[in-house]
Length: 399
Image: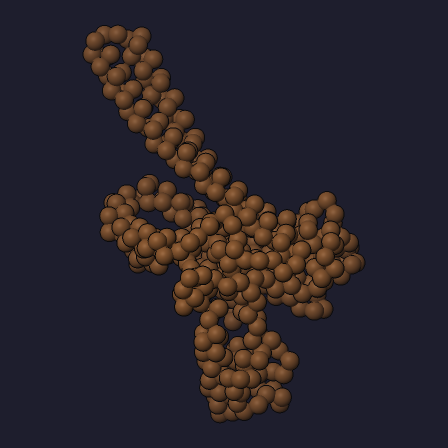
């Protein structure tokens, strides 16, 4: 109803950015259905407002019509192919194209090349559909832990039996779906099949690929450290058994060496395991935003120049931090991640977070930055809706 109320005001536009979880927005029939639902929701609200319903927080303005048609709503809707750019204000991108598990070969047109009635889903979407949705039925908080390997580590420490059941019952279905998809697609994961329309898009595709390659390298390093950690634990067990045998034989010197080696392997294994948290916590979207920002600041394309706000989503991690580049313009530039209704938190600060968190970035014209750097050093307004206060409140950010 609120969105219907918004688009009913003359001149207002509603922009819907697609991502890996709602890629179906690309279908014209889906866009049309959304317009119909918004028109119907506005009609319901207007009827309530006319009847004097004091519960609605939306004002009954004189300029509002009694009803709006789906055609009128559709004219107020925008569905950008890849990103949204507003000169001098912001650059907005979902962010899934920087994630190798969730990137589409052609984000602007994700349909299968040889069967355009279907969408080519990346591995991450298959994982959610055939595996992770059922995991969340057991552990609803699982989606709050990013990346997914952090949840796996939690399972290993806290609930290994659940991990075994998931692998036994769900993994075969996921692998079967993955095989079928790869059989039906002619996919080149390291190449963006989308053709760039201008120099900025060409550079954007390069940045996306470079960040994906970095993520892949980090994933391989994670795998190596996990395997190494497990191998060291097994070696420590073997050495401990050898030490017990040497103790029985009375070879105390070699026994001591075996037990020292056992302790060393365990410490080494623990170090590798603990280092995974830092390895997996790299803010890859901040890195992506910094590179996009640096290109915009160069001013090589007159249609795409420096902006104060570079806004992303995707990884669910609400965040605000300044961007520093070599060619900084005369104003502060910010990386903003709007988060998601399912927030990300660590096991340590779980009690300080709600499992659902409606976060958003508010840009008010009179508060936007301009070239007066000294007068506009304040943080962007990254907010969350407080049900208790019935008002927005600043998002609580954790390091």
